[in-house]
Structures are given as structure tokens and as C-alpha cells.
Image (cartoon, rainbow, N blue to C red; front, side):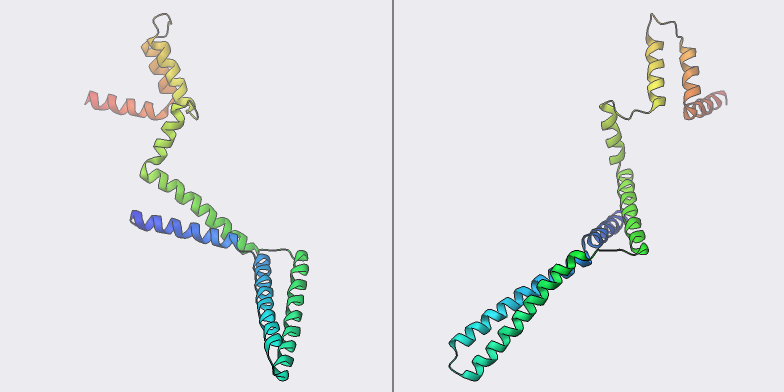
Length: 184
């Protein structure tokens, strides 16, 4: 999978999680009730304008009837919004599972992105330069190296090498490999 395709997948998952997390059935009902109430108010004003400007009694009666119906709609939407306070949003177990899985995949995608682009090492070096999150093995090795280079300290180079060999298994294997290459 190419880099741009990976990036598209990561962005798509992020967008999906965000869209899923931001929509609430309760807020959707509230928004719909508000919209209906606004539309009913607008149409009631139009009917009121028709009723007051028309010279035909039949049209005025129809406009008054429309105003009454719109008043009923406005009252019903107000009741819906009032009753909505007693409603609680719930998500089924599989919905929460999918949401948490998508969030996990997004975090994993960001970590892989940082690792693949080399930004992760840059971030680690930045924190290390501030003296934060330095691995214990590196701190022990640095302390031993400083003691080895100190003329007043009795630690020899062989002792420093022994401490480094015991604290870092990768160093020990690298030393053995170099020693074998040298002997052949």
C-alpha cells in the first residue's frame, strides 16, 4: 500500500469516527423540531399577510385556517422539545465497540505514520534533548562512560565495558559479532 493510500485510509477513518461521535439522535430531534417550528412560523406569517390583504372572504377563511394549523404545529414542536429533556441518548454495545475500534485504529495509524516518516525519532530526540524520557540503559551507560573518562575515578575501561555488556543485551550481541568477524 503506497504512502498516499495509507494517508487516505487514516483520514477516512478519522473522519468517520468524528462524524459518528458528533451526531446525537437527541440533538437531531431537537434540530428538526426547531426547523419545523421556524418553517411553521414563516408560513403562519404568510397566511396572516394573505388574510389581512385579501378581499375574498373564502381566501381569508382558508388563511385563518392555515394560521390555526400552524399554531398547532408550533405548539407540538414546543412540546416535543420540552419532552426531549427526559430523553437520553444511548448507543448499542456494537456501536460503542465500533467507535472505540475506530479510535484505536486512528491512534495506531498516527503511530505508524510517525514511525514510517521518521518523525517519531525526531520527537524522541527532541524529548531526549530536554532530558525527558531518556531510557535507563542509556543513562547507566552514560554514567559509566563519564566515570571511565574521569582521571580521578578508579573505574577502568574494562570495567566500563563489562557494565555496558551486562546492561544492554544488544550491545553484548553486537560485541560478540564484531569479535567473531575479527577472529575470522
